[in-house]
Structure formats: structure tokens, C-alpha cells
Image 1 (cartoon, one colour):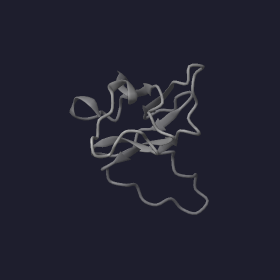
Image 2: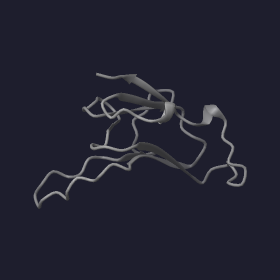
Image 3: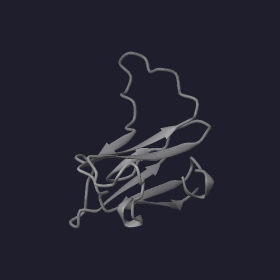
Image 4: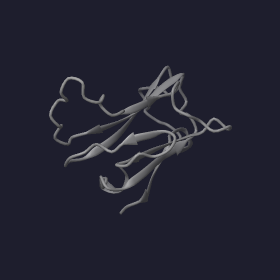
Amino acid sequence: MPGGGSDPSCRYRIAGAPPPARAWTLTVESSRRPKPAPRAGAAPPPRTGFTSTEVLRDRDGRFAVALSPTVQPGNWLPMPAGEGSVRLVLRLYDTPVAASTGVLEREGVPSITREDCP
């Protein structure tokens, strides 16, 4: 996360135009200690990402995803619980960006903004 880390009690916004790719995924990953496996009949595990086909977009095709410990309206990813770092991973599939150059224009990737902290 920007600024050298994330505060799990804060709310972040990942927003922008779709990246230059036929398909993409945005996932949140954690180095935090995992919780014990759920028992049979327990609620399903929380969402950990979005694909380009399922993320909600505005009329201009832009999207915004909230990363937060509390439920948010629209595209929401729950902040992983526990201690440790969190990272967002944007994977591009069938993209004109050459893997050897590894260069994306700033406008081609979503921005990450810390919105508020309790």
C-alpha cells in the first residue's frame, strides 16, 4: 500500500479507468496469520478480489473499489483480519504492455487513496 504500509482499521479507495488489457483482476493478499478453517455449514469466506467482468462501473467506464474492515456500498473488499502486511495485486491479461519493458503510464493503473481512519 502507498506510504510504506496499510493500517487495517482504515478505509482505502482503489479507483480509475480500466487498465489497458482485455481482462484483469484486482485482489487483496495478506501476510497476516490466517484464521482457522471454517466449520461445515459456516458462512462462505469473504471476497478477496474482482475481475474486469464483475466490477461495477460508472457511465464513463471508471470503477472504484473500497478496501475496508467494514461493509461498504458498491464494490467492496474486506480488509484481511489479523496482523501483518496487506498488498493489492493487479493482474493484466492479454495486454499491449510488453512484459519486457514493464512500463505502464500512470493513467493506466488505478490510484490508491487512504480515505479515513477511526
